[in-house]
Image (cartoon, rainbow, N blue to C red; front, side):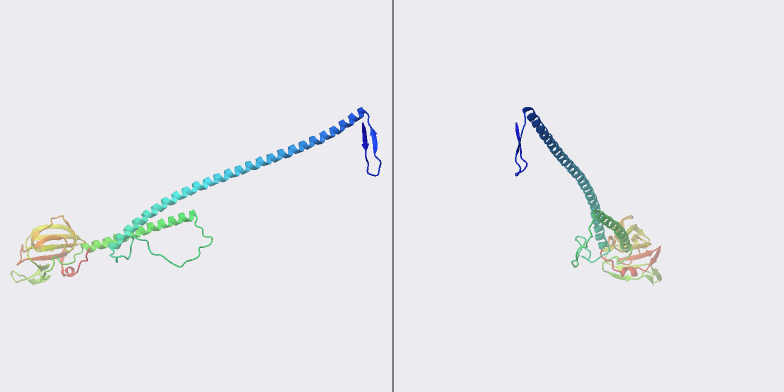
Length: 314
């Protein structure tokens, strides 16, 4: 086996002749070197690809873990939002019920207070307005702030409801006092034929005290209660003939005498302007009329101060 050695282009080539054993040994050395280099390259490539695959799986696992955490947080926020929405819906329903109660109470107070028609229309939303303004920067309405606003509004509703109920009781009491206070005439039309106080007795001409007013009226004409109350007497009394007496509370009592017929019985509840009897001349009377008395705390008082008043239509 010949091996030609070339140094460079200016030096002559040298030829080395190897016998067969030497040639085989040289080839073995070359093969060993080649195998060593190839094995090293394979080991390096294997390590490279193995490390690359390991990094990729770690990244995928980390991404999957992050996504799972984000999904769990999203589920928690969704559940919290649903709970908040249910809570807000319940509070809103309670406020709507309070608003309906306040509207109904307001309508009653409007009638009790006899306010002008249309002054408070509870059947529609109040008119609002104002110039356009830019939104406030950084003023985001959070769920907590909104919930606090609902609580504040509910508290305000409760306070206003208490105030309105107190006002209602005062107005009802005022109307009750007005309804039970005598006012107006016991008959429609007619005239006062005899006044309250000292007068000449129509039967014997002597000076006597007349404890009421006499209203001249036609026989069978209607007699009306001058205030609301309870009938405490319906029958005959000496000198009065057929009499109706009504207790109005607050110390007031009215008496209607000389009736042709009584239309109410003891214990009956009557309202102002209810018909309670018919005009007549029973008892000590010269003709058909109504003898009308007003008593206060057990003593007769002049009915004129009441009969001159006009009762408001209610």
